Length: 347
Image (tube, rainbow, N blue to C red):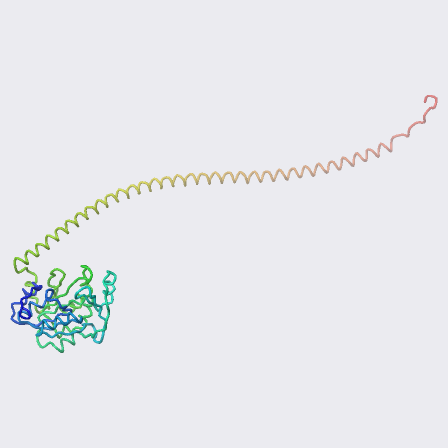
């Protein structure tokens, strides 16, 4: 019941199995939102529990305050350090807001308009120190990308919720993000207990006896839900097997192509070896030809020298011949008698 009227809302079954047998308890909800239908804490509130709701958006905070007069409702953002921070809200998406500039950019990239405004920031440790007076039954965190900051702002040695649950996926997709903050809890001596849809549950070490109650389906409805998830998982596994078979076929085809390429490479290698042999033979022939050319050049040079020597000898002999001929001419002139007188009678 809520404000005197019965309202349908989300019943968190793992938490209900583990904690609701108690008549009273205390919770902290970070990022409560204003929707009763989506509230994790509403069934506990209706069972007589109370706690702290942290919601920095104005309109959801007003609805939360009206619906939860017994709770402590805080219009702040929980962060690693107190002060002020920028809250990015998406008016067209009820309850969508984040203090993470990265998530805000993702929302904008997906076509969702976000508007920034400055809000007050506090740490989880400060809130616990001011408002917590006993044991914390569970801590629920929906910080839309700032989960690590919320955890780092806590003091899990002093205030140790029995159960901590998160929405373990990114704000604009179903991709997991728990690897970004889980180590803070594990280092604070908490154990991962189970996953239910997108939510992840952690239990403090001293309450590990709660883990079986969180894990095991409690009724037929929950069993059907798990069966539905199992069928979906089996369908996904079948798809994975088909994809694997297709990939294996591609691997076989790729293997055949590789073998063909290897054979082609072997042919090219043999062809290259043959070309290298032909090249080496041609180089050897060229070497022999070059040697023969050099030998001919040497022989030609020798013959040219012999020719020059013969020409010189010929010139010397010609000079000697001309000298002898000149001497012979002079000798003839010296020994030739003068012409006899002409007999005029004989004419």
